[in-house]
Length: 232
Image (cartoon, rainbow, N blue to C red; front, side, top):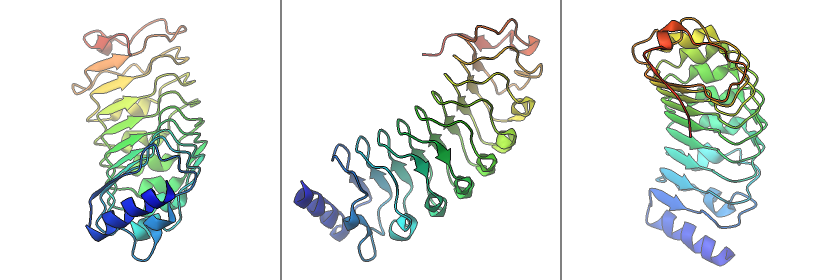
């Protein structure tokens, strides 16, 4: 398996591949072959889903400087390291189904990021720096342990899809009502007792899911003409 892995990476380097698939390789460590010499300077998409990775190398951005998409779904990563902030061209980051407990503030340096998936982890909070992601369109933080959302999230002016299902939210920051591009907001399976009165006032917001919030007794009037219903 090791020789096959080396061959795959060597071919990708020599032929200047833009895509590299390393899914289902039973990897416990980030392959050193990816980080040798000048790395894979032409690589844009790296798929490493369903392995057993626990961390990422500090020189990741130095060796893979043109990475646009990074798929790390279903590993055992506990911390998003500071090094992630140096992947300045990254647009898509999938860290769903890991063991994440911490997302480092440096994630706010990913100014090109458009899609961030952190579902099915152990997160209790998100750093305020998430609000620095001005190009972010999709944020999936469902099935974590979040008690609240960062106040600065309303600064994500491009955010269209926000999924926070199956957390421990008991209130929604009023600032979220200011998200100008938000089209779909899903908060099913939380502990919400009330919603901000301005929620739904934006014409862009069309779909709101709040089912399975057993303490929620009513809805703001602006939501009456929105689609409220089941999520999943």
